[in-house]
Length: 379
Image (cartoon, one colour):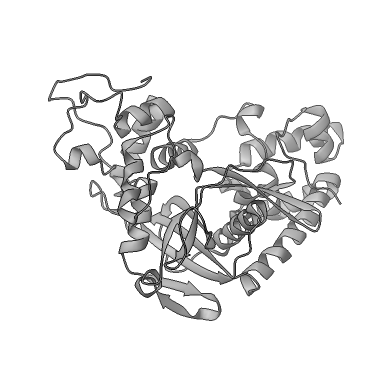
């Protein structure tokens, strides 16, 4: 197996994945090179195949300093069905998760995926400003700006938790505890989806596509109410941010439309690291679990946001004066100085003004930005 830790037997070697609950380690079987490594690869071998060594080291350091664990996606599914917490309903109502899971289970929702061109991506709705949403569609590396450290840590975090390069890894077997056969993460994690609303297309890659399946229905034959689980590195807060709700609303609507089913309810789940960092103490993630109505206020809010941001992004792209005015306003508010996209923004804005072009012309013509399966918003 490429990237495997090999057949090391030196007991002084310690697995760097100190933040990851490992089945082999918990069973006292970890030798950093178990005999069945090629048949049953441990997560270290998987991680070293998927992630650059320096990025994996950065993730290990970040998890140590901020005191969090990275859980296998299958482990999350066990927790959804075994633990108890508050399920947030719309209009400030709540429900017990345990009472909910007494009537059914949260299970993976396998789907092969759907790819088409789009103007927006679901993850952009977690960003507050329209200009930031535009830059979320553009690869920073394509313009000569490498991803910053936190972005690389986030990518490594997801690779460990919900990806696999082989048909089977031992974490897949954890799903047997829920009464179903093992399923490859490739079947329900990072699945491409599409949502069309009023001729506006949004592309989606759900971290964890799931369903709430009532006890009377059969897994593999029936489909329950659709849900998504999004893993965040950021710290837990008492109230879920509206941007995250909008991102997950896009996810569930896209899943429903792409798969071709109808849900009465949607389940939107985020997992985050514990709120207060305790150095060296790796702690389990905390959850926001929301249950929203298909015809409810959250879906209405998302549709309003989608139409609004499509219009605003189109104006920013086509009106150079409007772009500069927006940038000046955000700079005065202190937003631009701490923005993740500031280097890219300053670079392309400079070219735009030097050539007296619109931002759309700058990106598409002058810089020849290629947006795979993306089209910039237009009026």
